[in-house]
Image 1 (cartoon, one colour):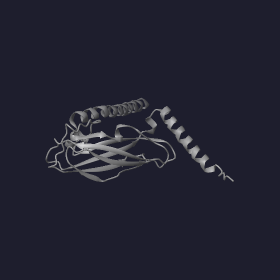
Image 2 (cartoon, helix red, strand yellow; image 1 turned 45 degrees about the vertical axis):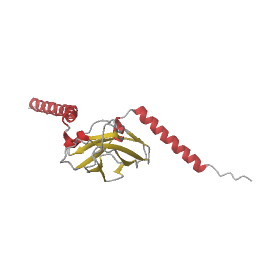
Image 3 (cartoon, rainbow, N blue to C red; image 1 turned 45 degrees about the horizontal axis):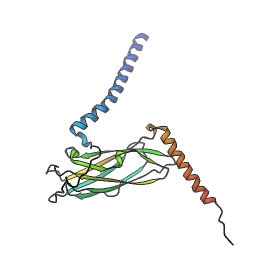
Image 4 (cartoon, helix red, strand yellow; image 1 turned 90 degrees about the vertical axis):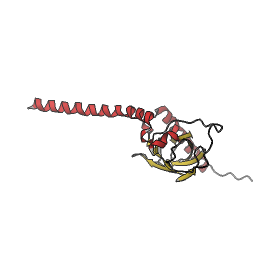
Length: 206
């Protein structure tokens, strides 16, 4: 009886391990699929803009909406300065996003963008974006982050509205501990200097 139970537990453990490994394997496979097909609105990397090569299509006007959300466990405040803008295909546009770390510790965040409808993703180009780098914020720090983009003139004619969404993740525990320690030390030094300024006695010259 005990042998049968032991075999069952072992099989269940192997199944659970297999499912875990399969889940991790799906991540790079999913990324590869998105890179090839553009499914799920995954956007590309940094785009090199050449004004001589891209002419705005003044005959069309698109609405681009901006959505922000934080992943579970991420406590930062995250929003776009504007809920949306109107832009001509081929026109370069800049929008600011604001993030704030309300905690008393140094944190690192990573924003992941996506575009909908999915068929618009390959035509949405970012020349500058905070999502290209990890963001390190000191305790209580607020940061304005510009995002510069253009929508390619080759966007299908039946697409009139595009939504750009950002999901912000807390990756503090995954970054190099040396980098995090240096950022924390800098934060503590700045805080100490501020306290010194506040407690320094006022000297009045006679």
